[in-house]
Amino acid sequence: MANSLNRRRFIQVSALGAAALPAVSRAQQDAAPAASASQAGPLASPKNTLPTGRIGDVAYSRLMLGGNLLSGYAHSRDLAYVAELMRRYNTDAKILETLETAELHGINVINSWVRDGISQLQAHWKRGGKMKWIAQARVNPNGDLDQFKQAADQGASAIHITGDGADALVQQGKMDTLVRILDLVRSYKLSAGIGAHGLRTIVECEKAKINPDFYVKTLHTHDYHTAPKPGETDDLGRYDNSWCSNPEEVGDAMFNVTKPWIAFKVLAAGAIPPQRGFRYAFENGADFILVGMFDWQIAEDVQITKQVLTGLQRLRPWRS
Image 1 (spheres, rainbow, N blue to C red):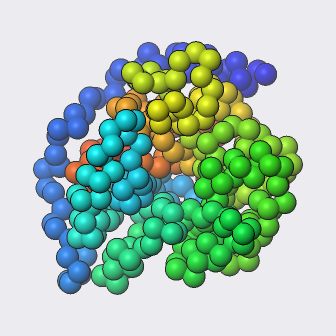
Image 2 (spheres, rainbow, N blue to C red):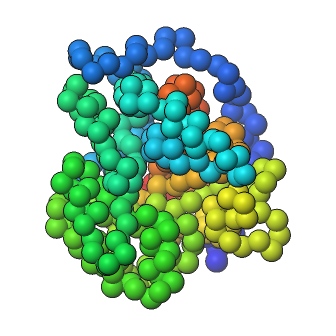
């Protein structure tokens, strides 16, 4: 209880200092943009570095590249055209450019669903790229785990069950399936994780001592226009507008979790400015943040991450 109260007092005080972070506009562009990616020729050497943490024996940048935007998954409320717009923008060539730009600026890992395929990432590797891949996988309707095997076969450095998949298993009381997943992934000598939208998934896994190597859990504030209203508790929110219904409780619960935590949906699908969302996630205990980025957002998001992490004060110890 004392930990919880100290954490909340810290948040109230540190919120006053957040204004000191230099404002960075989305309109700003990097002064020396990365060269266009191509499928021939060597990659340029990274020109920036980012602080890293470890999951297992692998070092990952604390800012991770999310795969949703590259695959055309759009949490766009009721704007039906956005997903198609993203797919048309993110051509194979543009995805290659995005991977190269991310690596040039110090991001060394992408997280994506194995069924989306990794042909562009494989092309990036063939050109000498070092981008690591944390794969998401689901249990198939027939109960088999072939998505996890596919991810291992294709070169993932870590694999986790998706948040919706783990939430469903916990709700159904199928904790043994989660154990089976972790055992399978570890049999490939890879780090094994559990994703979650709902906090109950984390709580039940900790209570049952499921012991994953890392968690992937949503975290964002409710200070945006379409945030859930009082009494709305669905993890996904009405009209696809929320993914963390209880951020205060998440911070409290994760305080004593000893496994590395990758926070995702930290910007509530673009509704929260990165200066606020990144700081909130790291101050409230996240060890890494997973952020969907278009190529033109990467340099700025890296700059913001470095600013936030410089002199950051947090109560939860770094777990990696």
